[in-house]
Length: 118
Length: 112
Image (tube, rainbow over all chains, first blue to last red; front, side):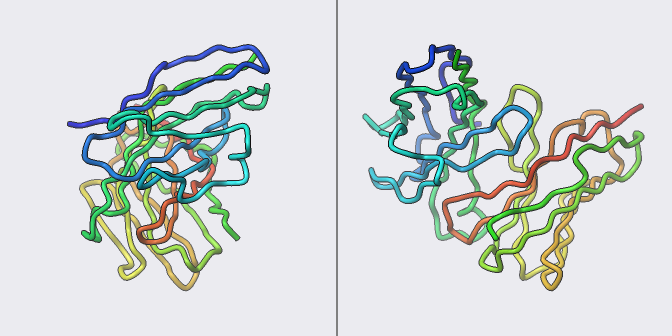
């Protein structure tokens, strides 16, 4: 079964450093997302991406964050200057995008990257 | 108004029993309500979803009950099994919308 793949599974970085989290969405999917989950808390939406541009972002997704789809398969989240409070599990998700009402809302999640900012 | 409230925070059920998790929302623009199951170290996986034009949806041992007037929906797990032990998140979005708004999660433990 196709799946969303995220690398690395765990990233440790120093405060102020830049990190890039990588995702390979399911191959025929058109919509891409990043969510984060701070330990013990709920999953929070960060950003959605469609047709090579951001379609929606949350208040969490400030100027320190950026997303990119550099080629036909990868989708990346960059944090320019990490803060302690950026420590969380980051999930990538993707969605096909179809007029089928039963299928069009299904977002498939990767296993996540645990980001630890020291 | 964007919040989805979920209860209980944790739940212990005996094997074979019924697990019930409740969610409530405020935003009437929400019209798609999925439940996600998350095992430790894994991402959330879609379990079952409902749209507000039906009051109940059943898939195997999992049933969603939906009360549009009360803006509440719940997940029932019949004949709960130890393998169902996981964290369950309710969520909501607009049809075709991008953003899933998640509840706070329920840690379910099914004991033998």
